[in-house]
Structures are given as structure tokens and as C-alpha cells.
Amino acid sequence: MTVPLLPTISTFLIVLSAIFVVIGWNLIRKKNIEAHKKMMLAAAVSAILFLIIYMSRSIFVGNTAFGGPDYLKVYYTIFLVFHICLATTGAVLGGITIHAGLKNNLVKHRKMGPTASVIWLFTAITGVAVYLLLYVFYESGETTSVFKAIFGL
Image 1 (cartoon, rainbow, N blue to C red):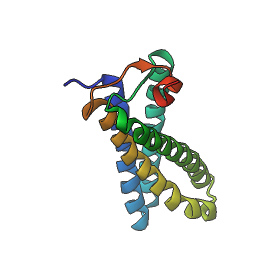
Image 2: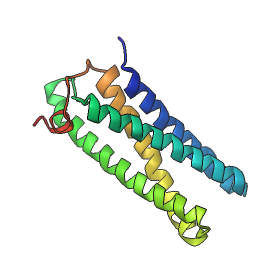
Image 3: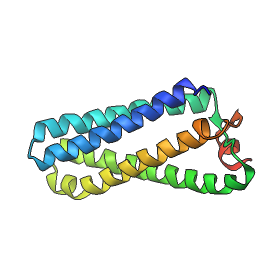
Image 4: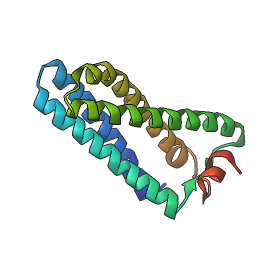
């Protein structure tokens, strides 16, 4: 079994981002503000690099359809849509939280940070699950447009 390079790199970047979030969260619990800031910015950079790779691959190569058994396709699709909603929500909340922190709006930052972090951790976990389902557990389906890959259209 061989796994494709770009999806493997992008999945690694999301896992790395989640690890940085966990480390950053622990650093702020210890009141290490500067190290927290650096770690959360590293998490953001990792996530942005993921997005660049993912979008580039989606635009220029296409998306990979689920290649597992037909009876699992509906469950995979529901799971994928859930993951996409989590990722979108986590990215928006993460961006707002980082902006608030950088602007020293600590009330907003402290209020949103834990929620954004938890959503991002679930995004990373579900992202790894999507990767495993597409490239490891089952033979990959065809690589095609995003709508055809997700919804079969």
C-alpha cells in the first residue's frame, strides 16, 4: 500500500497544528504568555500551510472519492460533511481568537480560546479519520471534482 504524498503532508500539518494547540493551551495554564503566543501562532501557520496544500490539490488535481464499500458511503459522506463543518467553524473561531489575542482583547480571547481549541482538536481527529478512510483502510476512489467526490454528483 502506498499513500499519496500531498494528503499525507497536509494531514501531518493538521496533526502538528493540533499538537501545537495542546502545548499552547498548557503553556497559558502555566502563565507563560510569550511561549503560548508563539505556539498558537505556530499552530496557525501549520493550519494555513495545510489549507494551501489542500486547496491547491483540490483545484489542480481534484478530490479523492471514498473507495470503500457502497454500504458505508452514506456514513462516510455524513462524517465528511461533519468534519468540513467542524473545520470551517474551527478555522473561523481560531482566526477570530488569534486576532483578539494579538490585539490584546483578552476578554474576547479568553472567552473564545477554549471553544476554538476544542473544535480544532476535533477537526484534527476527524481529519485523520477521513485520511485513514480515504487512503489507508480502503483503496482510494477516483480523484475528481469536489462535488463529485463528496456527493457523487
